[in-house]
Length: 202
Image 1 (cartoon, rainbow, N blue to C red):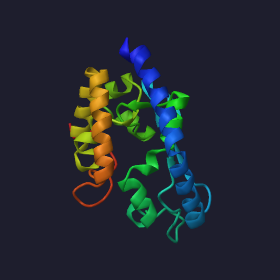
Image 2: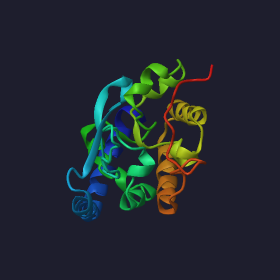
Image 3: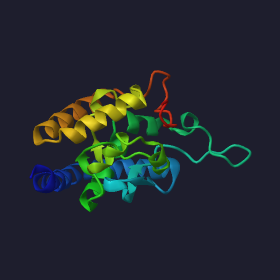
Image 4: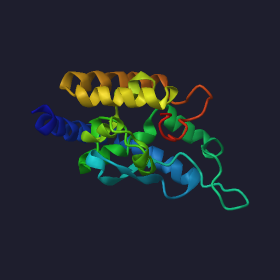
C-alpha cells in the first residue's frame, strides 16, 4: 500500500513544497550559472528508471565543456568549476530533479539512477535495484555516497529495495539533509568523484 499509493503521494506533495520554497534559490543559482558559464544552465542525461525504463534526468550544470586538442572532453576533475564544486558539495545541483519527481520519473528516496551503459554489467542481484523507482537520495547516499565501493553501494541499494517503508524513507531524507549541510561523501578516498562501474570482479 505504501509503495503503490502513499509513497507517490508523498513524493509529489513534498516536491511541490520544496520547489515553491526553494524557487528563489534555484533562480539565483540559474542566473549565476548563466553569467559564469552561459547556457544551458541545466545538464540532462538519459538514465534507466524503474523496470529499466529510460528517462531524462536533470541537474544544474557543474562542469564546463572544455576539450583537448583531439576534441575529447577533459577529465571531470578538470572541468568542474569552483561554483560547480560548491553546488555538488551542498547537493544544490540536484534541485532540478524535483521536476523529475513531479513527472513521475524519480522518487524522493530510492537507488540513485546510474548510467545506461552499466545495465549489461549488472549481475542478477544488482538488477533488482530497478524493481523500485530510483530516487534523488537513497540508503547508499547516507551511508557513504561516493566514498564507498561499488559492491557496497549495490548491497545498500538492495537493502532498500527489500525494506522500503515510510519510516526508512523519513530516516534517509533526514540524514540526507544533514549530509548536504556537512557536504560529506561527495568524493572518494582519492579526492575524486566516483569512478565508473566496470563490472563485477567475479
